Length: 104
Image (cartoon, rainbow, N blue to C red; front, side, top):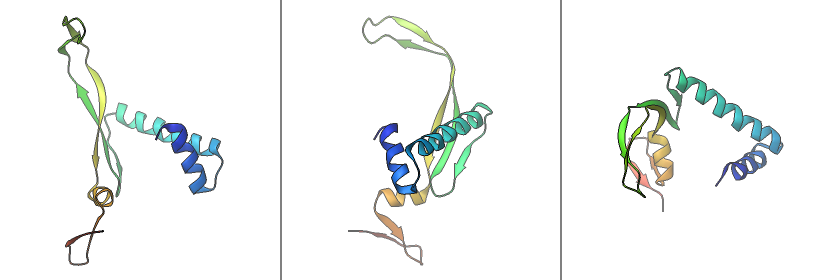
């Protein structure tokens, strides 16, 4: 799924226009970027945590030529999914006693 397909799906499920769904996605991306630039995590309960990750300068290699080059340091992002999100992805749910049942 790409961003255009996600926008269309969001618009349909939320009963809003595609431009409103697009604005929501763009705003979320903007806020996420701002928080990560400020070295803050963004945590969404039941979904996961986005964390900034500072990649250090390192030596890389051009795969075509084999020539070594310096890769500049940069800010990247890591995502750690929440346990609940992983349960949903894997078709499992916890019982009241904390046991995991698989959905078939």
